[in-house]
Structure formats: C-alpha cells, structure tokens
Amino acid sequence: MSKHVPLIVVAVFLLVTAGAIYLGVRHANDASDNNETPGPPPALTKAVQPAPGQPTPTGMSLEGAKIEQRDPQGALEWTVTAHGDLEFDKDSQTVTGRNVRFEMTDKAQMPCLLDAPVFRADYDAKVLTFDEGVTGRMTSNSAAFRVNHLVFTFSTQKLVGSGGVRFSQGQYLATAQNIVVDPKAKKVRLSGGVRFEKRR
Image (cartoon, rainbow, N blue to C red; front, side, top):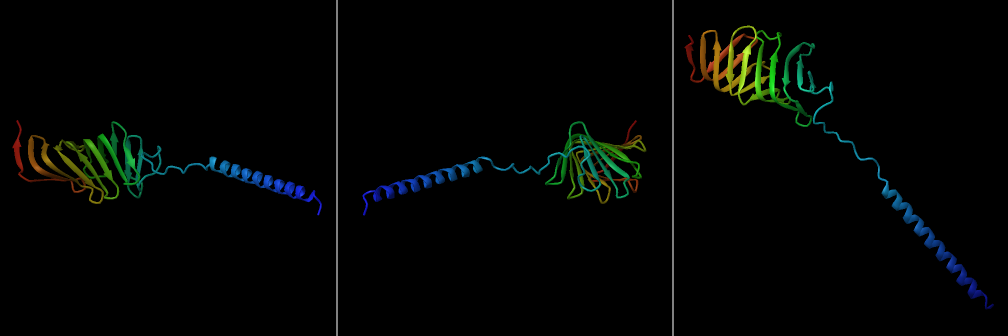
C-alpha cells in the first residue's frame, strides 16, 4: 500500500468536515433571519367609539356627541345629545355619557325633553337610564318634573322614575316617590306618598 493513501484520506475527511460545518452555519443563519422578521401584528377589533356615521345597533346611529334612534320605517323616535362625547362599548352594547339632553320627537303623542347629569343606553336590555337628578318637561304644555332616577324602555316607550319626584303643571305642584310618564297615552301617574298643593 502506498504511503500517500493516508494523506488523501485525511484530506477528504477534512473537506467533508469543512463542508458540513459550512452548511450547518448557513442553515442556522437562515433560521435566525426568519425569526427576526415576524408577520404583521393582528389588528385590534374592539372599538371604544365608532367612526362618524358607522352603524351601531339596529336603528341607532352614533356620531360624536349625538345618538339618533329611528323606527323600522326610518322615522326619528328620539335623540340624545351630550355636552361632551358619548362612548360606545361594542362588547357590552352600551353607550355612556354625561350632561345629556334626551328629546322625544313629535312622533310621540306627548313629546318631552329631559336633562340629566349621567346617561347610559343598554341595547341588550333595550333601556335608557338617566341618573343623579333628572329634569323634564312636556314640550306641548306647561307640565314639568324632577326626579332622582329615570328609565326609558324601548318596548313601552314609557318614562319610569323614582325618588324625590316633583311634578308641576300650571298652579299645581305634586310631590311623590314614583312617576310614570306615558307619552302615547298622554298620561302622567304619580305614586308613593303623593301630595298636591296649589301655588299662589
């Protein structure tokens, strides 16, 4: 056997080893490059307040500081306007605001205006809640009232209030614990320790 054979075997072994090391290093660099460039982050889906004109629950549109509610035929039923912003929470289907004015339109038989420091619309429960002292008046006559807490229910279209009720019309003033304003029937009902007095 030639004495040069072992040298050839050693040279081939070194070449194979060097090739394996080169391929291994190159593969590791490719993998690290792939890890350094992740795809774009997922888009956020929760909207705290919709863009102007973006539809919210059926029949309702919310833009800045105003809500409008329309019936299936498109007729305006009521509006809520806030001095600040109204905030819509998509997950809970609620709208909240402060220092708001609620206006029931002429579609109601007895349209009225409400002013309240705190407002919440719950579209799952289909109610509007006014709190921390609510004042109201019927736009078709001289009747006015004040109550601590008031709820407007979509289905009945009634205003139901409780706590510290004061109702006035013309020369008469009444106090009570509860009040129900039914615009469709053109009626106001007081209950709970009702007292009437005639003002001079």
